[in-house]
Length: 353
Image 1 (tube, helix red, strand yellow):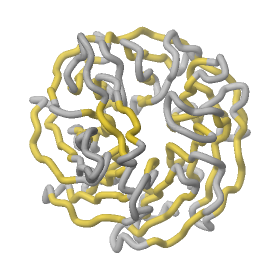
Image 2 (cartoon, rainbow, N blue to C red):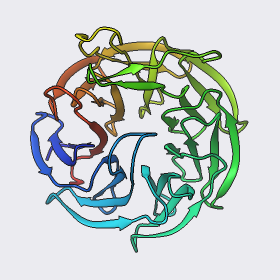
Image 3 (cartoon, one colour):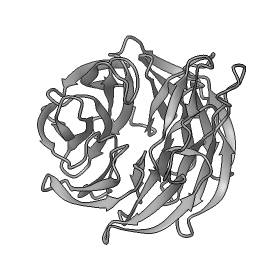
């Protein structure tokens, strides 16, 4: 059996694709509103899918979601829904392989800020790790399950969490805020895409526009952070807006660069993005790949041979061969003009489905 890519769209469905043929092999329609991020549980062979908002996007949602769907991809069907209340707007979701828990970032729309902790046996929320900054959006867990690093969009720092103690262990200055974060396979380093992605919706174009930088706006860059000292030990400047970031199994990372149409041109068409593969030892770009409109999420195969990029606006997934550094295909997940909504990705290894 081939390996499988799970793709969630905020428009309300989840698809399964054969990673060799890129053909659809299953779909779940009618999901709870605004599916966002996915995590794969190899022990139980299940997917966990967060539902962040009922409508709108970050900073504009009228109502917050409060669910994590549990999906059996072998059927495929939603087998249970975890209610995260009183913790609202669950966003990122990560498996703790040591304590056998699910950690869910909470965007603080209900007054409860932090990381909701879910017992994977009982499928119940058993606690919350309070954080000093609001809007816990992205997070990453070290491979040994001891630490989490969280990013809080606007906040000028990242938070380091001791998961065993269920408490904050420290913070890392990150002026300008941050988008996605990830950690190295050996747990020594964290990487953060910064600053906050400042965009506005252009209704006439049906597109996002980059917000004009104000006084003191910092340039786009990726920070390399030593988790032992909590110090920035390297950085890489990128011209345009950054969002997606994922460390590959070889220890290097991929980062998505977003380009925007001219806000004054009503006939402007979407501008394809790029994904860069960065050598973390030198913090230099070793390869770049063309993506489509708004590369938003990146995930890699466990063997490090393939990367998949969810393009939020175009509704597609770009597939990259990391051995040959070439784009090998595109999945037309929800293509066809307007907002495609392609968002969460999860790779299901061979034999796990």
